[in-house]
Amino acid sequence: MRTIKGTHFIQQEHPELLKDESSLSGGNCQVAAWPKDQTEASKYMKECYEDSVPVTISGARTGITGGAVPFGGAVISTEMLKGIQATSTSNIIRVQAGETLDSVQEYCRTERPDMFYPPDPTETTASIGGTIATNASGAGSYRYGSTRNWIAGLKVLLPSGKAINIKRGDYLFSGGKLEHPVLGTITLPKLEKPQPDKNAAGLYILQDMDLIDLFIGGDGKLGLICSADLILSKKPHAIASFAVFCNENQFWELRSDLISSNLPMRELEAMAETCLPFLLKNTGESYPQAEGWVLFTSIDVASEEELDIILETLEMLLEEKGISVDNTWGGFDEKERKRLKELRHLLPETVNRIISNISSKNSLIHKISTDTAVPPEKLEEYYETMKNILLNTGVEYVIFGHSGQGHLHANLIPVNNDQFAKANRAVELISIEAVKLGGTVSAEHGTGKLKAPLLKLMYSSRELRDMSLLIQRISSS
Image: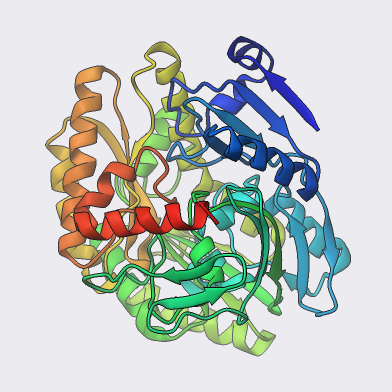
């Protein structure tokens, strides 16, 4: 197993291990290791555990909450944990933690062209281990749900180095309690209210849950995910994708009608009014109705007959709202759909690039964004609240995200320390309002180091203490 010791040598030879897409600065560690299999990883984790050395798990470092940024101790990279293989179950593949979403989809294209892996976070270079640790979702989660729905089994190394295999359905909690041959007796915290449907804040807690779901979305606090059994889904006959350029009233009306239409939508996304001007200013790209909103939707199509019905339905809805077909992009093949996806992804990519440039000049500044979500029926009300809070900061911002799930991201662009402080306060205020509406402070990115302070807005001190005790309990197994 390759290891490097010494803070200076790591900074010089592998500075990428000390940062992620959050642009959080100050990362440092005394040793880094690259195990190439479970045996090496297990041995090294045991050594760290016995020497009381804190461990940070590093995947592809595409996260934006600082979870992969180490502050002392050791880093264990999953980069060398590679391999994808078929299993005895036709729709399940076994994937090592260091593989990426891209490599999984490429495997499907070549080995299982009739199947695909549904989770689709924006960063397709994200590692499989990282997406499981954060229970990542993405645009397609409107139809397919988050990563949790597509995990049939996990191989996990506990902080002590012990390995456990967890298959879905093998170990179920009853009334919040479970007996496990390695973990012993586990008792779940009792929450004062149920967690929101879309939530990545804190541990996933349900009194009669499956043990595997405790480790999915655990933010790496419960162990290192070595490999996972991923569930594949049958590809639809076709996918029809659309980008509708419209004004704000048209957006909310069209969104409501699409939700009520029962069309098999895999996504229902939004870019609010500041997004297109932001792209024009920072990329030179211009689009129809540059001062307006954009509604994105992709619809699974079972047959050519169904495609005709979908097109007729969408044309009727656009006509009712007074939206010109000239202001609508449609995509039916891979090339056209890629054009729409690139537009959607260009926005967060541009934000990250700008923040990275600002951070290189001022290390106190890092990515400032919300990952809040509210019940979908409350989103319009919540958007107005978000906008008013952001306008009062005087900091440039864009709002976009998963409108069908009540989940919009506000990304702020602070250019100095004063704006950075105002942006942080705005995120806190927006998070407070989300919780008031029955939502979450983190819906898909996990909490990492940057979102962890927001947990106190959502959970009581007793709930947070009990979650921490559960983590300690499993860590000592």
